[in-house]
Image 1: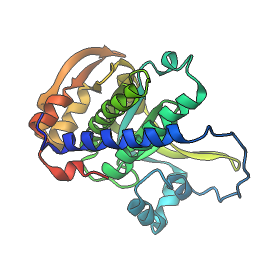
Image 2: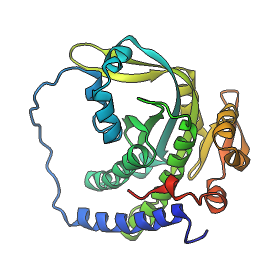
Image 3: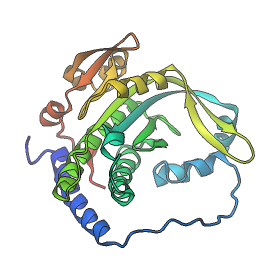
Length: 275
């Protein structure tokens, strides 16, 4: 892999960053748990986006008079959905001290958020313990959501590899992730009551994305074969790097050869700006 490849430069950048962050975290005293009171905030859909999307997109939404009402009523949108989680996390952390688990997640999760939000203009929808669900195309559609999701997954794999090296040097078990992606029309809506409300996405494309993540092994990015149509439409050269993996829930699963893709195709620095 060329040292001039933008994605390779990102890996080296993260490798150094994780080492520095890990050293700082290991030097800190153990944290104490505590409760703190917070002031009640209005149950407004815009509030749910704070910190989940890029700052410039959040500022745009605040000026969008139609956004709040649209989400309250529910709307159908063509989104790309990504699920990622650490493989074997439960078994690996079964006997791990809590402070080491928190240190691991404190390194992993913020960088995943940065990749989704700042590098590829996605939205963090849910934090799932050792995993993340992200969506692309909300609040605003660009037409390249599936490419942004796949590029996010590549960055996540690169970040996991860099984190793995940093943690291995500190005596941690290996860290590897699997990623599942799908796209399609889903219902985006606000659910809950006056005590707790949340914006969520519902539909078979979401369920199938989760199934793809289930079958993805460590270091793999898996999509259903139906998602290759929008992939080829948005970025034709990307489609040639998929290979059949088997089936999940009766749907043909395709694994993306992301290592060969970044070696052969990733020459556009704009796709891989270091944040």
